[in-house]
Length: 248
Image (tube, rainbow, N blue to C red):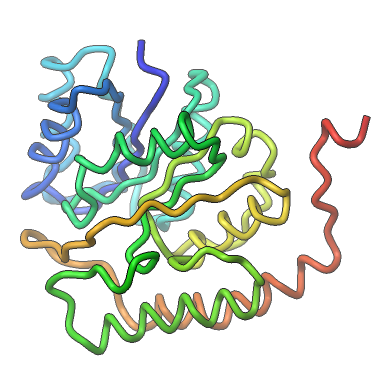
């Protein structure tokens, strides 16, 4: 039994899914993998089912009907992982923009440095993004700067999707009250953990744009993040962030 599970949402990732699963299972540190597939018409789920026979008890699959949003996929995965009593719950993309070799470094940030949330950060040590157009790099970088200003978080890569949470963080956050479903979900999760007083640690990574498959990113996603963060900050004024243990 592993203490860690990597949640990977998928939609039409047949070019990458087998390779990313093998890459995770090839690491010295043992991780389990949960794929959340939103009805990929390209047969992504069928590939995962075939691999489950090779990795019994390590590879898991939840199939959902239609594209329901990144945030809802992760919430679904978080709840499942908590029920299975994993201690460290990871988010990672399927397309190798997040290097599986960095998973043990995120894990170590929690186990060795005491982080409650470890963020694979593109911007904690300069700008470490490969094969993105300059316009997209600037949009992403300044979106994170903007979020830091509005929220007060010290995290430099607020929209990062390569993250690990200790289970008590996800148990404390009221997952059903997470508002955003798209990429602003990433901001909301970090902000909520920050408001609860959990320790967030950034681990520098190199983000490499996907080689295979089609990106799901677009300007409307950034728009959601930019406008949504103001709503997020405003709502925070009317919410208590006391942890249950502190209310005794």
